[in-house]
Image 1 (cartoon, rainbow, N blue to C red):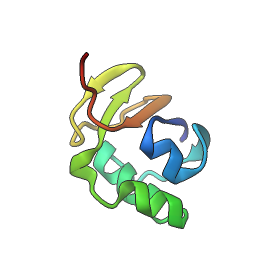
Image 2: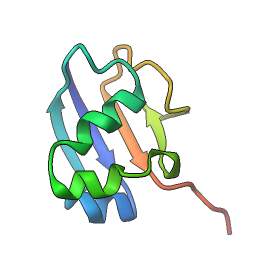
Image 3: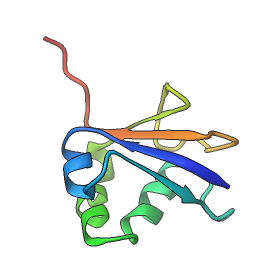
Length: 85
């Protein structure tokens, strides 16, 4: 399934891009699975995904926990925790 992955802040810096299109296998069922799968794509991905507990996610612009099924989401955003100010 084709998915647009958006990266923000230090995640974007580590990966080296703010956005990429990926074809995700059916074995990738949750956001956590996707993070594990992305970690194998490059050294930058591995660096960004090495501590999944430090990541937050949104599916189709809706905040979700990492154990959320991907379902038919077309966009996944990965970013550090958001702080106010």
